[in-house]
Length: 394
Image (tube, rainbow, N blue to C red; front, top):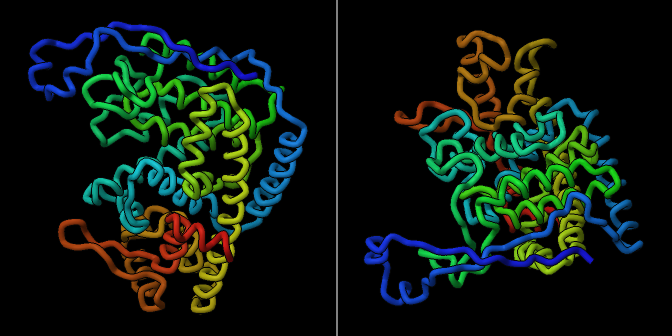
């Protein structure tokens, strides 16, 4: 049996002057002590799974491997496209939404809507995590989180205060869950990193447990859910479950958020199978979504290629692959990434607009940008709950 969470008592102190501003009904509920979670250390915890679950893990890993292998033959960066879907879905789990266009725009300018800027940070955090080539560490986890939370004004680094989930904003009393005291966070993360380095646990099961334990520790003041889901990808990449591709795992979790949250609750009660099964289902759906997106992008690029009568070697033949990675561009971005002059980039964009590949967007305040509407439509379908369900049903 996986160890259940226990609790320890801590003093709760508030400045009397602060209490004067708290509504009387809420003030009555504030006590002098509270209970904070005390999870067990897991670095050396035995992971015993039933044969049927181990068999299913093996089967899902085969499916993922086949999908992953198929991506290395592509002439464009599908992982770059799918991590946008992943970032959007992960943010939606936290009730944070924005259009695909605005998120792509946010990667080029700070003048984009605020939610788009936050989700764009999620894209950056995903890229940073997948670029890491060493085992996970407390430092690398903090680096992912700090990238995610940049431009938000939130505290960076490990928390030094008590946080809680649900209940009142004034104290942890009556909260749905109270994570460990801040003084224990560093120790718990060291233990988590040690568990993540083990080689005697199935990679998918290990990723699920690392995620659940991370969410239990809740090491940051904000952004724990999104950081924990980025960490899922880092674990799968580190253990070479995914080498060439990324998968929109959060799209699978978004499909049934209630079940996902319940699985995390069951982890607190010593049950690891629900979160492992939840991740397996999410991975299976992610492969379906990823495959459908790849097919749709192939169709879009094929149509674009049929419109291109330019000589071989022209920059116009390299533009589609660039748009897969960044579906909203400006002249400066195209010039820098295709290594051409601004004048050549302006001419290239003009031709792409004539062919219907790009459309002009933006305004005087934000500047002039161009979007690949066909690709954005594909991404919108893969980044919303309704779209994910349509893709899965095709």
